[in-house]
Length: 378
Image 1 (tube, helix red, strand yellow):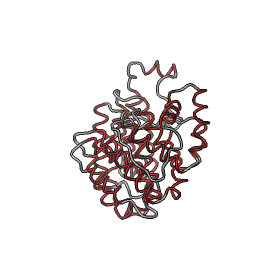
Image 2 (spheres, helix red, strand yellow):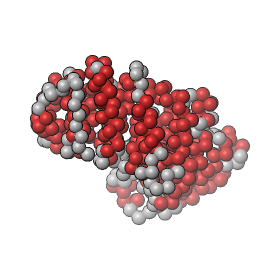
Image 3 (cartoon, one colour):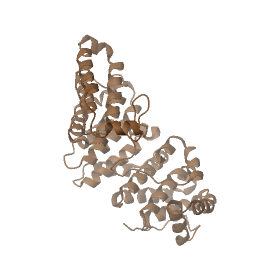
Image 4 (tube, helix red, strand yellow):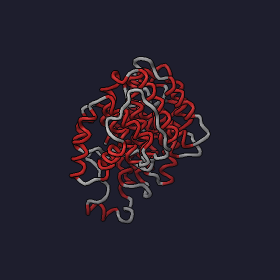
């Protein structure tokens, strides 16, 4: 989509063609060209007007990698300039981001713009609010179009990664739970369900108190169904997401009722024994099983589940390795897991295109200083 706007702060610090070339050079250039582009952009990034230049590239560049890098740089720098932009420009920026989220065809760009929108929301919601954002999420999540529902889930996951935004969303927790419940059961798009899993994983650490934690209980059966389908179909990404989420929920007091302990154990064992899953995914399922035993030991002893569990684990360990597994293990090219059983890659990336362009050593270093938001760039 191509779309331009008229912004009252002017922008125009750098000619359009020059900025387009520098941003493209940051992604596709040689090491020397990247350093030259960094030097040319460093001073401009310290000015509010340049945020509008980047916004114009985000909304009108024909190159997806330029649009994505514009979103990345805006997210890293716009917080420091927000108050200087003025009410008129901040309103236009918010409208522009919603427009891009609704029309952007490239999934990696959508992911980066969603992260930018979450950063903007941190600042917008503390003052005048951003009711249009919540309306956008509601309409997208209830849309008949799968791509719109996926964008809504990507945006929700990004919003829930910000503690400041989560505080503003507290009155809407029940509505949020219901939206995620519908997404987890999306029969048309597995990507929407995975988006809901990511949103739940972002939300869970922010829940405090028995009442908030209990909101997640009705979603557990749906998560387990997704996990079962993923194991049966050999879908590593969904399986890893489910195991990681359940691992997180087991650490929350009251999130997992006793009735779900057996099904979680069965899912973990099924995944660990699956020859259709990669070694990293199977290791994640074993880590989940370890967390289950550590956090629910008394229940498992009382209900005599440990003997059954040990027998099942013995069968997993005694099973013949799948073709190629021994070679991968000996050659070091197979499952790259840390000593606690977690995949070294942290389970990030995947088929839904949520990866983000790196913007060079100098700019990445500045991004890390922004705290939690900077962690999304990797």
